[in-house]
Length: 276
View (cartoon, rainbow, N blue to C red):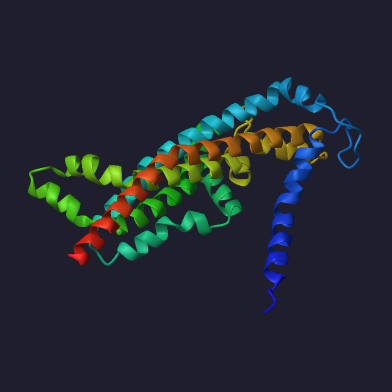
């Protein structure tokens, strides 16, 4: 039978649509011409211009600080919420879990307007404080859902055995529960960090005149046209993302190898027992 080539062609088209614009951004970041649509030759001029732009790096610093504070606050609140929700035995557990994930489903423009009105009523000055509160509110569900899914698959007998041996609730949480759910917490923190770094709409409603984040800075410049300086910035951020992914993969290889070795050893032991 002849092989069907349609899946391969479809996959190639999807990959081209996804990655071709990114490759064009990287390519035109080395464009000597100021007009993005016209290739004027290879040059590093726009990278030099980018590194001399203090406003861009100030906005990047604000975004990194904001994303760091947001992911830390989301990790603490989301983890405690998921652990507390697991122990809750009530009819309101289902509705409460649904309400906890609402910030993901509500359009960002509605959240932004709601935060702006709420902070105005409280009299909070718009700036980094309101940005952290707003970003934490819509990033908590990412940690909450990751930890909740991990708690569902966790063996409850481990915590029960620790209690039988005399451990208190705090000791059980820090010695048993927390190490087991830490990968889920880390995954939720990474999602929160990425969502905070990427947010534009909510940030525009709750930021102040003295605090400018990188997405807002880029958006304000794009309104007057995409410059090769923005392409250079996007290229550097893409390289940083790829580097983080590669380092994460290299760091996780020894753990995966140990897990695979343990599984293979357990399989061999089971086969030996069956032969006996």
